[in-house]
Amino acid sequence: MAPDSAGRGNATVREPRRVHWMELFFDLVFVVFVGQLAHGIHGDPGWSEFGTYVFLFFPAWWAWVNIVSVVNLLPHLSSRGLGVAMLAAMAAAGLMAAAAPEAFGARSWAFSLANAAFRVVLLALWLYQHRQTSTDAPWRIWIYNGSTAALWLAAAFLPFHVAVVLWAASIALEVALVLASGRLWANRSVSGIDVDHASERLGLFLIIVLGESVFTIVTEVSTDWGPHEGLAGGLGFLLVALLGWALFQYGTDTISAGLAQLKSRADYGGILQTALFLPFLLVLGVTAIAAGIATAIAAPGEPLPFGSCVALGGGLVLFYGTNALVSLRYGRGLADVLPWAVVMVPCSALLIPLGTVLPASALLGCAVVLLVLVTTYVEVRHRSAAARLRR
Image (tube, rainbow, N blue to C red):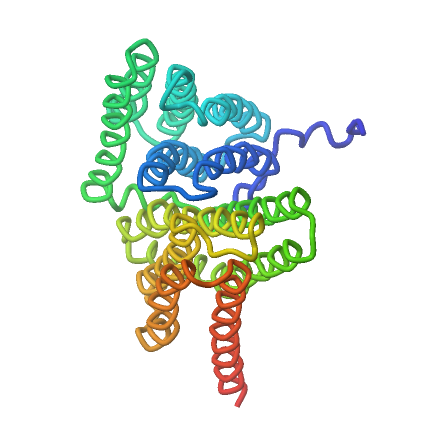
């Protein structure tokens, strides 16, 4: 549908406090990237496969949080400018996703080039943001994205055993500079953060990640069609649905209020922890759970391989452990967090040895019962608290 002439004058205007459609479009590539990597932890992954998944995923996650951060700090960037930046970043992220399965092999050069290109996009955006808000020399930006883009570019032309060292050095440099900014320029860094945009952006990304988990379940049931596989798929869907319930009935409000509280205290370190680092563990947990469910659907009557038990149980540990840490960092009291965290974290860990003896469907059933119990407990507490406020 072509825009009419009356709308052309506002074509470049966007609402800075809301997530733009182009940002959501861009997120789809990152979910593809996560899906590509997650295939490596299906079946019976060992420590090498888990390590590869984490090592390759963090550069992509770090690129994602960087572009989210700079857009958050650019309220006057037009929708057209945002669209061009998102499409350029999307192309780089797409190459990163395509190269990911062989990033430790024949496609390491492509993975390096994709990361270099992504950092060039970030460099342009950060320089534009700096020009809008500061008269200081932008040396930090040139070090932060300029030098790291050069490291990734150099890595594309070097043997893998040398390239991987440059990858690690680039990420370490960026993380160190961000942490240093939190200590040296906290007030300046916090002042421009739009809490509404940041919380909505993170929540929507988590929706897409959970959606990818549902897609994985449906695909596996379609491939391994049968009543037992269907039962395992149904239990897996219930498991993901309950995770989504926990996130979007309680978590999203906690994110918004918690970030606002941290901003009011100029707690830049707390914002970094809860918006950049801890959600990485949350996404790792969700994708690991999906990998464990996929393996269970393929052989529902047999015990899961140990690696899949670790993926399923360890993923739930990461999910609930991370949520507990975020809640505490946002100022929630121990009395609110400990009752469910103290139960869910160790009980989720117990699923790992249990999965080596129980049929996969039975293990998924145990996990669903565990989540139903904790969801019921939280619901009862919320309703009781609401009833006390109405009195």
